Amino acid sequence: LDAFRASYLSIHGGSFTLLALLLKLRAASLLPAPSSSSSSSSSAAALAPLRGGGAAPPWGTPTQRRLQRRVRGAHAQLPVLGNAATLASVALIMVAHVGYLDGSARAIVVVAPLLLLLHPHAPPFRQLSHATRHAPAVCAISIVLSISAGLNALFRQTSVEIAISAILAACAVPSQALYCHFLW
Image (tube, rainbow, N blue to C red):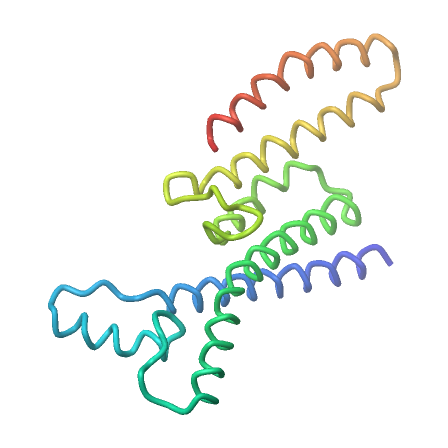
């Protein structure tokens, strides 16, 4: 039964990953293309409303303009939906691996690169930029492994093992926190 639950979660995790990728590609296709000449910039400016960006065109009925505003509003939500799909895929894959397949938390090392699909300047990652786009992936690895080590230390058998694990965790957690803070 656990194998079926793990496969179910993995299928949905893969579906969310594919959705996040498609939303990332769609949002990237809506960005205005860089132009080198003035004629291409004027044509790009004229086509921008049709692609979901820029000002409303001077032509069209009020109903068409209202529809175009709704489409632009829907396109503005693509990065938020992409971030939600990315976080859901990582969470589902980790739950399937750790919860149902009796794997270790070290699977985050393999799953964390999916966090590169996160959109910058969209909730919950508004401070994410091109320079810090690797921070969520690296911080996720650090945080998950630190939590796993802490939980592992709590469930030790003897008080000596618990004390040693607590001392090692007390030494590691501040440096991991500083590391994550430096990345952002």
